[in-house]
Image (cartoon, rainbow, N blue to C red; front, side, top):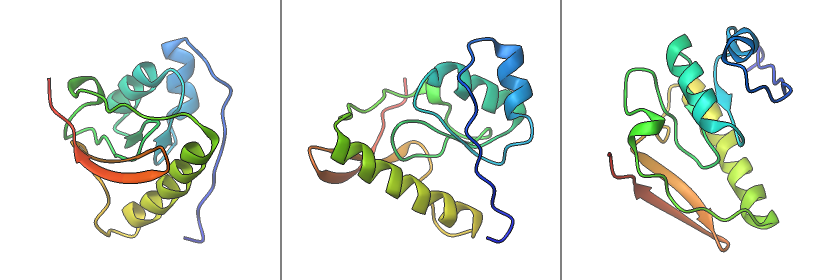
Length: 120
């Protein structure tokens, strides 16, 4: 992926500012304000990944339509989650089978689990 560029934006709570920041993104990974970012991504047609491993695509299951899995926020689980997210993003852009909602991968207590989220 020679054209890959990663940017970290300051956290904003204003929907207009959020849309300005994200309008040229190809994928968004968010760990805070996930409901806001998921809605902006949906509006802009951008794939969204929350603080676990699963892509929410604008034309599929929406972030706010699933029962979110319980995750751990300890350092090891967070580090493993970030590594798996990076791998899934590469798979997604290479057109390989990536994890798409309602399927998910979570890391909890050092264990990696695949699951299917319930839709609300």
